[in-house]
Image 1 (cartoon, rainbow, N blue to C red):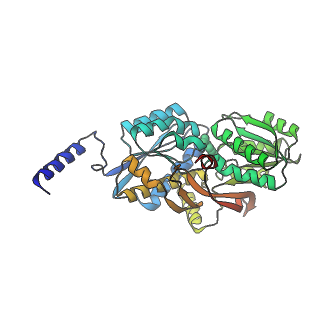
Image 2 (image 1 turned 90 degrees about the horizontal axis):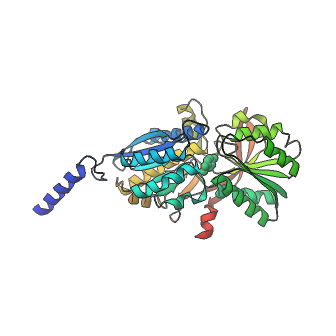
Image 3 (image 1 turned 30 degrees about the vertical axis):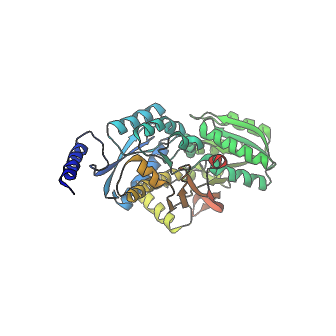
Length: 393
Ligand code: PHB
């Protein structure tokens, strides 16, 4: 190096080392701001995502690409204004390199502009509305989309002699995504939707809605409610005697959430769902994961939210390895595009076009094994992309 170049490099490194000046070069630790609901009615989601992220760090060490990973966990109580405020604060004041978590769709939507303005990767570990990844070029998703898991279930329903179905979904974005995906696929296959019911997201009383289902006399109800709410639906479905009236419940796996399934009791038996993760998934990776997760969390069984947190950390670690520790948002997001790995849920990859996860969708039935309830997989569709974006790309 010539003397002038050396001086220039020295001057540059001094500038970069100044406090308050963010720099990919001078910074030794990589800060990940994890924003999840840890209080309120959706606290189970936050607990799972946090436990998944922490387990990844405990089992893979806290270093990647020559940088130390530091996790900063914040509770947004599932309130969009709080998520946005926390995201803003983490990016501008704490100077985090990545924001992550996002337990519900409105929380992810509220934070997307902050990822864009701050040029920081935003890892959506939980929320499932299709459109989320289009809200910022810095978003990468490790969870799933509702249409991704719903389309295979609608096809299954049509093939399995269900002719008349009532849809019953939580009345917000992912519910509307699920309703639309089910309705379009099922009617195209010759089925009939006899009624489309939307229930409030907060503290839903399912009783009046389930009475409407009974009156409509369908072969089945298709349902999506977010993780944490499935037990109430299952209980009231049973109390109202819908199964006795010959009406089946089919649902996305959010309803028979592994975290709560044992508490649902026998009413859940026989429920058919589609989803991307079951704690019962038969692979050596998953067996080790479930054992370690339960050991680290007082016996709590991992659900798909826990896996979203675990795999979201994997994305961050692998991106840092690929960039050699370069934490610039664009470099990290580019490194995540096209990543493939064997997740505890099965083979997955990040679609380089959409930054959404491509994964196997499993058909499952709730069964009892050794005195516990499990979502037992009986069939699968491989390499499923989000069908909404696949149709427009
Ligand atoms: C969402 O709000 O996007 C969401 C939340 C919980 C779920 C699925 C989707 O189980």
